[in-house]
Length: 317
Image (cartoon, rainbow, N blue to C red; front, side):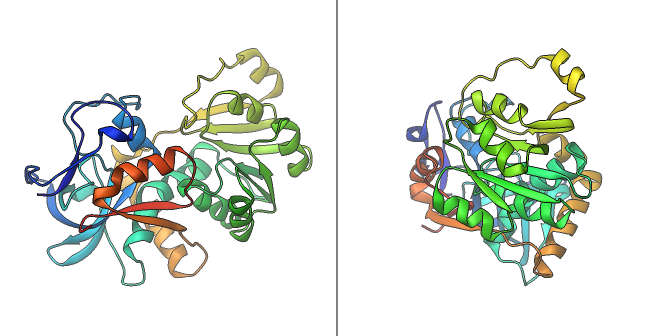
């Protein structure tokens, strides 16, 4: 079977395409998924260098999501790994039937990044009607969906932060009221100005000094939700006394915890996301599709912030 295999930890250079990967073992509670599109996520780049939240054992095939067919039925699945391949064993509990109106790229965007954006706003931030939401990395896979969902869930103002004029224009097209250059020297001041002086919810995945800049924008009772560290820079410790004095919260989120109880924590988000797409309220921004043999380039582009929206791999290429 053709797949991407990692036998040593490192950067994009460790992704090796092989034609002799073992066929997936399909046991009880799983099904054989014939992959038509595999999703690429920033977490995959961390896993390749062994800097992910969960330890990784060599060798492995990356890929936490894939769309394709099971017994002729179109589905999308969240995976414990193995998505960068022609076939994968998909857990039935995290495999979702797709309507004909949802294409494979959109499905891959929804099943991991869409459910993440849903939980960031609903579960972690407990977004309230009329609140101001700041979305960092607003042109990325999670960000493009979070901008739209914040609007759909009742945010009063949505501010997008992104690194280029094109990315900021995309975020505004998707519903952001204002956008901010992530390279601003005074990022805190720029966000505050765009928010009208205060932010209630910030969705942050950059890390390093950016996290501190975001925290400084929060109003009393504001929530900073952290779901990644794309910069790979350490974040300064949070002063709990400062949080108490300002009635603020810092919340972490990792989708792996939702995957442990999919019937309760994934089925509802997926149903709502698919419904929003069907009604035209939510649009997945599908970026580049790379042939499987260029998985290394996909990781290079993602790490260099040259990408927009959801990245995909085509296992036939």
